[in-house]
Image 1 (cartoon, rainbow, N blue to C red):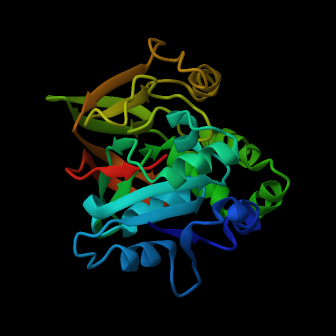
Image 2 (cartoon, rainbow, N blue to C red):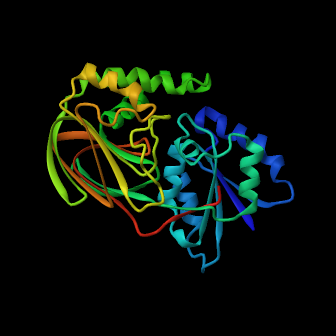
Amino acid sequence: MVFHFVLNPAGASGKALEKWKRVKPLFDGCEYKLHRSTLDRSIGDICRELTSETGGRETALVIIGGDGTLNEAVNGIVDLESTLFGFIPCGTGNDMQRDMGLPKSEKELIALIKEGRVRHCADIGELTFCGEGKSIKRRFNISSDIGFGAATCAYADKTKLKPVLNRLGLGRMIYLIEAVKVCFTVKPANVKISCGGKTRLYKDCLSAIVMNHKHEGGGFEFCPDADFTDGQLDLCLGSRISKIGYLRLLPYALKGKHLGLRGVYTGRGDVIKMSCDKPMWAHTDGEVLGKVDRVEMRIIPEKLRLIV
C-alpha cells in the first residue's frame, strides 16, 4: 500500500511541516509519497487529483493538519468508495481526534494508520449554501453552523493576533476573545427550521448548530448525543437568550451540560433546513463561507472510510 501524505507547509503556523519531519522516521519501511499544497494547488486540488480515475483501486490519503485541512480534503475527494482516509492532527481545535477518542501518542496513532484497515465508516455532512446571490454545496466532517460560531470564526480569521497565538500554542484564546465580541455585536435573527419532520420558527436566535460529531470549536460538546456513524445530524440552538445569558451558557456546553437549560432546543434528522429573516454567517468545520439567508444540511449517501 502506498500512503499519500498531504499537508500545507504553512499550516498551523508551520507546525504541519514540523509534524511531518517528526513522524517521518516512523514510516520507514512503508511506501509513501509526500504532497505539499501551494498557492496554485490546494489541499482539495491534491486530493481531487489523487482520487480521480482510480479504476476501483484504493487510494490511502493521510492528511497532516487541523480540522480545517481535513475539511478541504473531504471536499476534494472524488471517489469516496475507493479512498482510505487517515489523519495526523495538527491544529488548534482537533475536534475529530477528540470525538473519536484517538490516541494522543504519535506512535500509537501511526501504528493504526500503518495497518491500513478501515476502522470506521463515518457520515459526511453537506451544506447547501444560499446567500449573497450564490448557491454552492460544501461537505463537512464535524459541523456546520449559522450565527454565533460562524461569526466567531469569521472575525478570528481576520485578526492579526491569531497567527501569533497559534505560534505560542494559545490558538484557542483568540476564539474566546472573538466570541465575547460576537455576543455583543451580532444581532439575533428569527430562524425557521425544518428537522425530523417538524417545522418551527425560533425567534431571536443567535446560533443554530448542526453537528455530525459531538465537539466543535476546540472541545465544546454542543451535541453530546451526536454519533458520526448513525446517518443523522444533531441540532442545537438558542432562542430568546440574552447575550449575557449566552456567555454564561458556554461553560456548560464544554461538558455537554447545557441541554435542558432555558432557551436551548435540540433536534435530529438526516436533512435539516433553515431560513433566516436576516443574513447570518455560516461555516463548515470552521471554514467560513459568508452570510446566508437559507441553508440545507444533509447526510450524503457515501461514507468516509477511516483508517484511524
